[in-house]
Length: 139
Image (cartoon, rainbow, N blue to C red; front, side, top):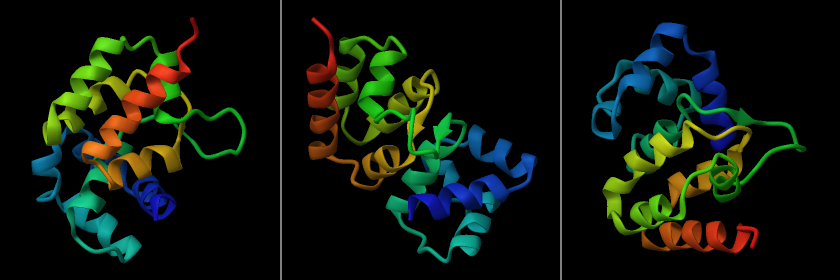
């Protein structure tokens, strides 16, 4: 599913891609470009699909099997501080916008890791992000 959404996003015109980059999560669902992605993928119009597309826009996604990083590792490599991850994990549903601002700094994100985080965004996913981030830090 993540690959289908990412491929559809890549096939959009530059104007549609720019429109999606400017949208916040609420405005994304009313964007014509969002409906074009739904038409290309055949997916349903729901919160999961819009969250996945929201997080995929403007990111450095790596589709090759080597040299890609999970979301937590990519955040760590980008120099994001632990306090920011704690803030994301405690901010509830609104944390996805803040997470996107941090993810823009990341390089070579794993598509599956990012898509799974967006699809299942909730208390458990935020807790796992914090857990993986802290366990991946070098002492």
